[in-house]
Image (cartoon, rainbow, N blue to C red):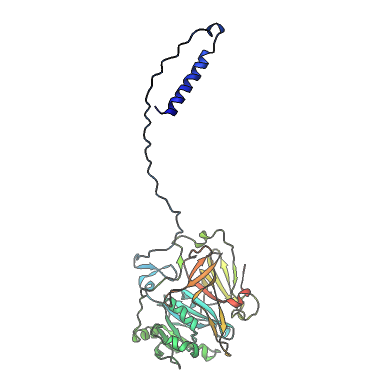
Length: 395
């Protein structure tokens, strides 16, 4: 018997004797013989080891991870939506489209998976429509000239770049590289022109510069003639992380602030690039979509007469510089910078990062360093001139 157990046993026995000895006075003098205590060995059973449970991780957010083909359809790398497998696995086209008032309305923008908007000379903005689902379109446009920061963005989406004209001092060497597959109208500075892809459309009252269009059949012919491949290569990285089917991205950001009105250039005239047409987005909660306005009116796609709308809006803040007397601009679209993602009415602040070369896109992260989760659908990326970031408004 262990010493501790034996002492406890004796102590208990002693207490029993004491309480038993308390009785009538005449019995108190009676001699009491202590009982014989035999030494009993008490065997303490060995403790049994309970299996240690495996540590469990908190379930992560429901996002699209591995994509698979179901009934000939697959989820898009650009929107997360279910589309024909052939469309999803096909590289998109990236088409340069003017966005100033005399060019309106544009044709085919509503079919874009991503619309990239950035300032150009004259302090207006120009659009680049990234379109993977172009089979129902006859044309896209009008089409305008190239700037190098658009080319770099198109390369990140592995898109075939389509333009009519270029700022030669800053684009000529870049666009003619073997790594930039482009379908360009025949102008000075383009070494492999594709005239079969372009033509003009009568637009009464419009200047000639706003009558040139990319025709889809001619574009496909040009791509074949130039030997371009439509498959993504091994460097391909999807630009966004999307919420899974039946899940709203905003459910992951319940504590984030909300905004239903978004003004990339504020509401007043300014030199940010957005300060002339004063575009803005208005969130529709019932549709979980952001409607686009410009010049105090809905921005319309001439293809079907519908107002442009997207599921997500991104502010990608980039350092910008004025290059010369012609007001040609330069923007840093590699490295990193501040970013705001608007999705589901929520405002998710963080940063963008792009360090893996030209063939991969910028990725967007929240303030905790986690990739931002986007709602399925199209996305509008506004390149915000960092030096004019104080004009940005949302509420």
